[in-house]
Length: 297
Image (cartoon, rainbow, N blue to C red; front, top):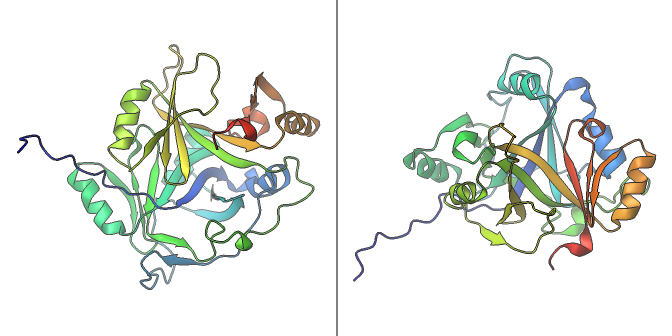
């Protein structure tokens, strides 16, 4: 028999990606922008617990967000939740005041939220923002390579990933046509070290063959239905590891760039089948674009 210690499975086995979280102020008008420019749609879907237990949230959630509202949209099969703070008192308001509007967090569904929380605490990972009624909690980003992760055991009653018939038609007049999530990028000082942190935390597999800029050092991890890209920061970038940007695939990158610029959204950089738009033109979000045909099948 081997004396080697058994390899422990990561404490989180992610199910469906629950949502990309955007932080904003009430006046930032993210919802109309996402609809008009990216072709996001509303989906009238209730929530249920993964294991069919009656959903426990019967009143206002007791969370740590301060005065805020949330609204859900879908971009293809990616759920996007816009968290809008109307003051600077709670954590969300502090976040927007410190960082400006933009990317906030990600979330995955798990089968058993409280078992997952117990495993994480045993691993001495810091849990924050626990909302028992709302059935979710966050893991401190200092323990997750700079990515603020929410865990929940709720899912959408009508999920287009189960049946595309649930997804409302995209608007024919949106600026961008056919946009889908390609990957989410976290800017880190050491991609290998960050990959080790995340693979020890969530069940994941490394993906090879995704497009990248010349000289860019990245590690791509598939976590159920979403890819997290760990990209090495420039040597003179002294920021902490943090959620940095997201990449959208489009069927025709050339046409998409023309449409964006015609709408006043400048293309900051173009390199082969990749493009980047100016952050100030996209509601504070850093967005990268890729030709869909360049993605591995």
